[in-house]
Length: 378
Image (cartoon, rainbow, N blue to C red; front, side, top):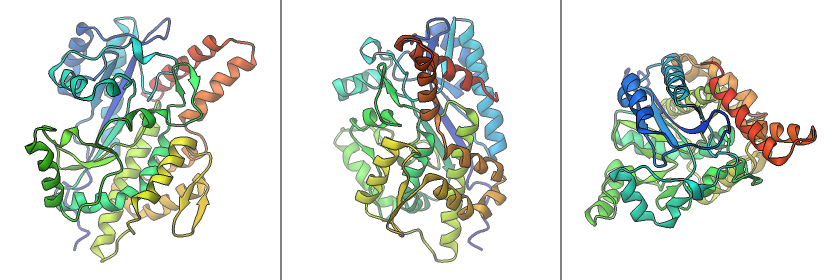
């Protein structure tokens, strides 16, 4: 009975942030008002400016299947690319531009972003990063908090598979997700705390709201949170994926994990909630190594290679993937467990250098590669 979910459960919404680059130099460029107007005329409220003027954000509608999400996200990507082309610009879906300098960027002149700049000071100046957020529908407020406690275990796995930000200001950082290093300097970030109920979550948020520290829970930027705007649980830990198929594979796994945890609860089972200290260790491993060094399986007490962990995740959620119609998308994760965007970018850079190209040419080649990946399969 508990597993007969209504069609308001497990709906999908995907938000992506893009960077805009000059189509010739591959340098970051600011979006003129006319570009935003052109995008809005075609996409309405599904497109908006972001904190920096070189960024643009899109969001799908409410999608009942991964096929719906694919169609909508492909339309959003292709429309933004078409509009940008008219201004000599190209969008890329990557969490850090390989060689841009954050000191040369300006934030968008809107009340929300001006307030952020005032509140956060110099910390926000370096926010030259992009992410991807995945919403999964959970009509019950208490369900959102209960599943958040359990789903947190899998956040490092999702981060590792999504990593796309190895470069920062023209240097290889040695990390697979440098974006998270920048983002974690903001307050109210990181793994979510544990709450016993939605009411406890609400009381905690209201304490800050009532003191005028934040205006609402949209200023809480945890890796996973109950959405402020929608009846969803919002996963926010992932780097944005250059390839649309990678983005869809991650969304499908988030959707399946959410359903799996709800399904287990229907038979009085739960995923073990581990201490945040331990989850943070895996979060760091994912941030540092991506898929190349494995994550800790706390039940086994061992570091397990990412391909093996992905095999286990696919097996764990097989029933849910069949019910949701996204088994094919989960299969894509097997390839991602072997190589993410971070590895591909490094390969492009190394290939140019090995062929005798200089550092600047190698960096520009990485951006060219990211442009190709953005347009792939749309």
